[in-house]
Length: 342
Ligand code: PHE
Image 1 (cartoon, helix red, strand yellow):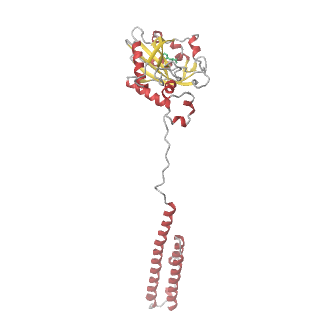
Image 2 (cartoon, rainbow, N blue to C red; image 1 turned 90 degrees about the vertical axis):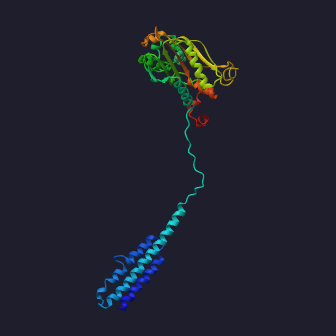
Image 3 (cartoon, rainbow, N blue to C red; image 1 turned 90 degrees about the horizontal axis):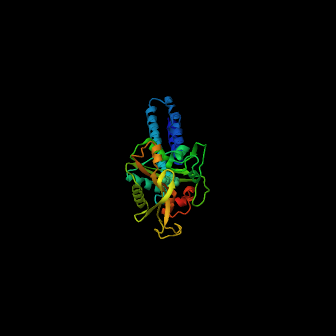
């Protein structure tokens, strides 16, 4: 019995020492298994209780309970200490300085061509126009034939065309959409159609084989040249400022009669004459005219009842003028430094 008692106190002693030495949760768990586990030292000792006399048993039992309680309490206390220490270590390692400046996200910018195009669209929509579109890969028929430019017409020479076949091409002008709209719709018609057009051209500061036009078409009863001039004036003032003057001069297009060239007073010098407008005071932004009655008839609209005007403006030209961009290539190179300027 003395032996058993001593052994129990020895276990208590060893447990205390082991607890003192444990520095991590893993080590503490090993201590628990060793002393308080199912196959631990205490259990092993108590399995010998059967050898004791009935009088001895309660005495030893009580000591055993005391030792077990001591070990359990020791483990719980140590566990709390270790967890706190581990938490502190982790907090220290993962601490972050909330006063450091953050990383700024770069936000994309709208391309200047789209920016101005959006303004153009808004301006026309506010005047009751809607937006129409047509394909870039187009039939010769819509790009030329139906616009009163037959196969051998000299006007074709001015538009160096990318052909896929004698019948298919990359559209050289958004005027093709005029035909597509009139074919499907009876007047009143009021549409604009912005889009890409293609012409064989050497790339330089003012030429690009791909550029953008904004086509406009109005067909109704009693439409005259005065409506054309008034609409253009209104739109140019809206887009380029209230002091902008608009000039139309005779020109020729097979699909309009009479035809006109549209210019606006120079953005830079206001009409005085400067390097930008080559001392002319005016900048040409497109062509226009009264829709040729032949084209109306061809599209199934009675030219005896209806008349209309059409115009086509170069988007790049307008944006270059407005922002003083002197090289058209800048628009397509996507240099962020350039795009950030707008
Ligand atoms: N499509 C013509 C061009 O590209 C411009 C234009 C459009 C002229 C509409 C008259 C009417 O030059």
